[in-house]
Image 1 (tube, helix red, strand yellow):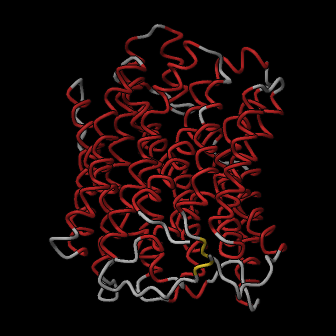
Image 2 (image 1 turned 30 degrees about the vertical axis):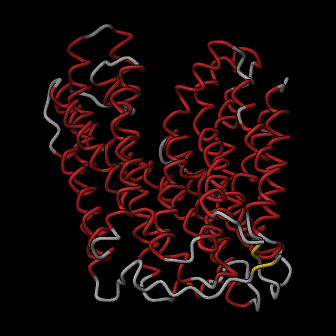
Length: 498
């Protein structure tokens, strides 16, 4: 059944994305009170925080394929009901393992809703330019959820108990259950076969092991356990790819990567996510540890960049109606590169805060303007009966890119930090986290100055690395085989189901 007004359908699709985005980051606000009430062990506390993201990244490809087979509207309905029920259960959890289990299920449901929603946008808005605008509006809701989550979570915990942050999703998902049958069309692939469970297991295990290895490296540095996990995960990934090539009806259609320009777009998505994920770590420590801002003032410093991304995600598609979309993409990437130039030249002293804020605004605005085009470019090249798989493919590249960025940029910053600290203080053990903690415990202003100086040097090094990576990204987009992200949109007809 086709929606009478696709704008209402888009608004409905945006509601779950808003709540899913809030749920990604709101737990960091609630964790201290949850830990005081539930008394988790350090390992349990880590799993409480990370399990949601693990399950989103690990199951998104599989759930995208499920939506292509059983119908995207049906999958949204099922997972909205699951998300609402499990959110209510999480709110009244009495043990750490209840939180971990419910957050895991919520992650699977969220992994299903997002690619199904993005795939339906192409069905609701068949015109390429309107589809881009709709994708920008959808991403605006998602980014708004990320931006308001800490403030909203803080207000709720201030007046209620920590479980109230989970109840946010219940009314929104119930609204989806009531309105989706009336507003959303059903789209599926009637010729698709059954889900290959072995492929699903290989995909889940591969992504979870690789992401877990990256997170372990961020927390504890390079060692044998994360290296073994990474090697095993990569090996399972190779088996997964070989199996997809051999199956007549694969879980992921890897032939999509052979479409002109698609593989390049996937690399652009991965590399930009890597840079954004890695630098976010440095920005947080720079504002609070290196410059001594309170958490509230640091959050206010980050507000302009979130607003810039929200504005740019709508401005980019609007500009695409007046100039060639390829120029919008190129301009957005140049703006993003300028942000990393700012990181590479951070001055010493308080004036560095303004430069970091400026760099953050430029980087987030650039990726905000470009992201709807990149997503649309990949989805538009996929047969519409597999659009859900294509959307989940891009989101998985984004998730892995962020995790990789934390390791790669974190490692670069740590190497430079230790060398600079050794030159200034005569010794350099551990990370900058240890350095700031030691300087605070000893109340040693001289040591704190050396740690701050070494950390800023590491931050500048990651900015320079970001500039070099952005040069690679620009070459990928300027390649003769890189196509216009709208003009070449040749979508196959979707298969509507009444």
